[in-house]
Image (tube, rainbow, N blue to C red; front, top):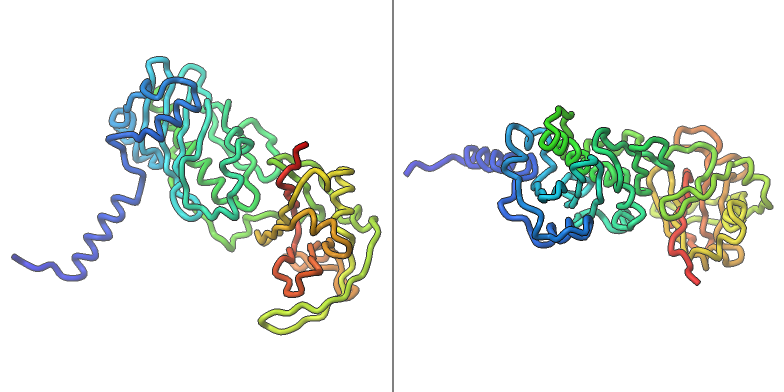
Length: 345
């Protein structure tokens, strides 16, 4: 038997890898977890969803919408889609149900993913997944950063824009395939993988204000001028790092003052918060730490000079935790404060 060269073996292996990873594969069998998800979304028995993947993905439709790995339908005109778009770390498996008569999304569930839980812990919350319900298939969904201004906008998960885009790609793939298979109309193709450049500056933008949000909704927006109008203090500290010690004389106000300016009494309504910077760095702080005397501040000056934004212009803000002398939970280039762990009474 003739032996293959190492290069030929590697080439063959890469070809197989490309063929298997270039797009989601059609499923001969749909799992109980997936049909149960269709049932949970629609209220229709899981047994009613019949596998029509071979028919639905034929005629080049599978190549146009590679994130779709399986399609089902019921006699009552519901369509269930399993989609596996590639997000930041890998595939995110989605179950999506579309009403064939109205052409609207009945609902979406996230079945599994490989994303970093620290950054995407909101992705399975109902306030996020529920945003897809009722969306019409005639227009592809678009990502909005803070507020939805159009009926096809989906507000992204804070600090997880790429993950959100991957999920939106999966839902859009289901929308496009539905339009071509069920409605027999042409729809633009949808990529299965997010194309992003970590250095392209697609993250939050410093606008001279800080957005206060909770549960995916904006509660308020506080400008730097308003923050400078709050009682201010100067705090001197030395920050220790691997590159050496640096001396700082920060000026700013207690973070609790900023939160209370947005909504009096708000510090008693949540148990923690996440400070988000324009460099996509985030730090978690408990509300007990925020309410501790002389501890958590929002600073806007250092050594008598305004803090600089990422673009080098004055006007940045920084969350400083004084009991952390190593500065690991400092958040520079502040853009948003996400309140979490709502207190229920």
